[in-house]
Amino acid sequence: MSDPCAPAKALWQSLGLHAEAPTRLRLTDHPDPAVNSSFNIGTAAQSAIGLSGLAAAEFYKLRTGVEQEVSVDARHAVLECKSEAYYSIEGDTGEKSALFDTLAGVYRTKDNSYVRIHTNFPHHKQAILDILGCKPTRESIVNAMLNWNAVDFETEATNRKAVATALRSFSEWDAHPQGMALVNTPPVTVLKVGDAPKRQISGHPTHPLDGIRVLDLTRVLAGPVCGRTLAAHGADVLWITSPKLPALPNLDVDTSRGKRTTQLNLNDQADRETFSSLVQDADVFLQAYRPGGLAGKGFGVNDVVRMRPGIVYASLCAYGWEGPWKDRRGFDSLVQTATGYNVAEAEAYAVYTGETDVPRPLPPKPLPLQALDHVAGYMLAFGIQAALHHTITEGGSWEVRVSLAAVGRWIRSLGQLDPVVAFRDGPPLPPRSVEDPEVARYAVKYKQATKSAGRVSEQKTMVAVGHAAKLSVTPVKEGQAPMRLDAHEANWLPRQ
Image 1: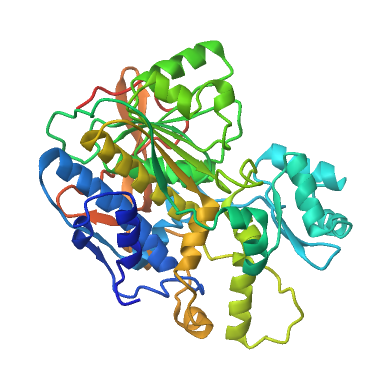
Image 2 (image 1 turned 90 degrees about the horizontal axis):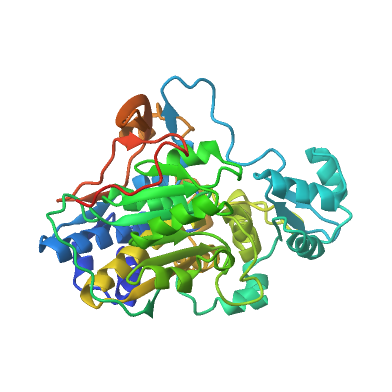
């Protein structure tokens, strides 16, 4: 790739932003292989993080007239896209548990294919076990899955609100109705959805998003990464989770950095009223329910725009807003499996190892990190800031859409590396320890901040991979983390 900024420039221009701004973006020349994968993950991570940082810089310029440069190191970007593996908390003993539940993963099926199941949430796990009629052990699932064809199990899982996908190649996905529905879908879409006066922002911001209020209703990785990024650029991000839903502590503690956290049950009348009042004073509504999922609760895009004209309503989903799978549940690992990545990576690795005569299909090989999730998170942050930019320059209410599958298409469009180069020269990820020398190079300390007796009290210390986007005038905010999901009250901070 002659211009390492070319992918970022193309996306920047597609959102109608100032065409000259990408000249202030500094990305490492030819970063890939930045990790041991046949895909250009370094370019994808660096571009997405660079775009989110550049959008913050341009928003700051819009508010103050001050220009600045944004730089992103490729390897740092890759490690930030694995941040959930690289943190420690003072006083905690033992190793963090794995990202995936012990029963999650790929299983061979009767038709000589594979299915990937997701069992991190208890209700998803139980649904899988109910379909298979087996015990909650890997051995039991292995045996039971051999009674199913891959696509049949995928279909039944969807009907039973479980989460599973059949293994497909790129060519199979391209011929699938959902793959065809995504052909012309960019990784981030920004749409004007209502009229509103131009946004007026006063004051003298220290950070680009000072005074911007973000309601974060997301779970798992992509959405929370987006909220964490907006908080790093100064936004007051209030992460709202439900006390009735299971938490993912190993992920939540990392993706909550820089945010304030509170819990509300939207099925409770009092909590709904509290939430409605928060919406009326919000600037960004960030959600990752399935398309249409919040509309039934009265907080769909049209509802929120009526409640708060001028808001940016940002949505994340697995498979997009069109096609037969638009309402289907999904996570990064399953979208990789469904859309062809696991087959393509396995085939590339077989070329590298010389095992080209091994019977097909090869066992699925995932990417070395949850690239779709993390890149989608930064794309969402990029789109939100682009929409905020438009609220100042032309007014209106805006919707931002990002799907994991569309982000996957974009990463795929960056091409694949020669397998030998990819796996011979691509450095593996370091061990899951902040004491590893490479991880320590990018590590930042955070103090636990909670509300206690009317004042903020600092408690434990957390060490985590810092933000890879470096802004020359307004460095990101780092240093505080709630480390729990109910650390704050359900209210907004005073605008600066």
